[in-house]
Length: 111
Length: 113
Image (cartoon, rainbow over all chains, first blue to last red; front, side, top):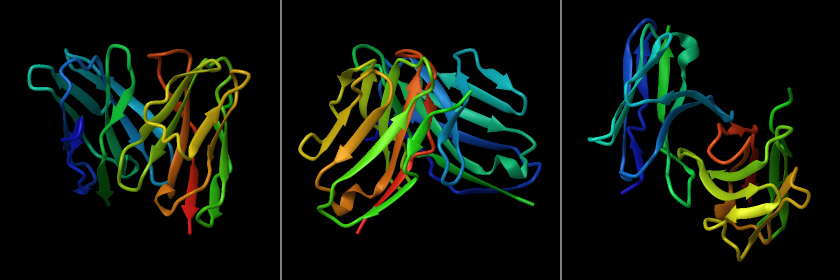
């Protein structure tokens, strides 16, 4: 089982739609959680951190459920420019303290 | 401010040849990372440096891969000899310190023929 699992998609949605991505992680000792965005043939870029209380940044809302080891990202009013791969990322704790990336979920927003 | 700079952007070599990638992190960033990203996968950490010290190289295949960061600034990652399965994107990232936000370079796309 992978440490961070995501549905690879692709998710094909029309402009203006609301889309949700889910992610699960296996290490209950994981300390920090993030969503990164990666455009085709580009580098990953931090989209937002994910906090236990849930957090929102414009059209993007991230949720964390530590008990279920589950992370989500909700995108409202999708734009063509939202088309990208969304990577769920978990930071391990302790001595290793490194980022573990999921395989990514591909989103294609259609006009 | 300049981001993480990597070169070359693309490299095509024949198997068994050596290859080297270069990375210049964001100025002032003490922590440098090399990642491997295969097609359809997320990046996987190869090695992490704190200044010039490699503090986590557990995922680096040491039989053919080597890395250095001699002056604690820029870094090189080398593969010798390259194998077909090494075809991937090699990403460099840097952060102010351990646990801080990582910023990625554009990567080097390696094709081994």
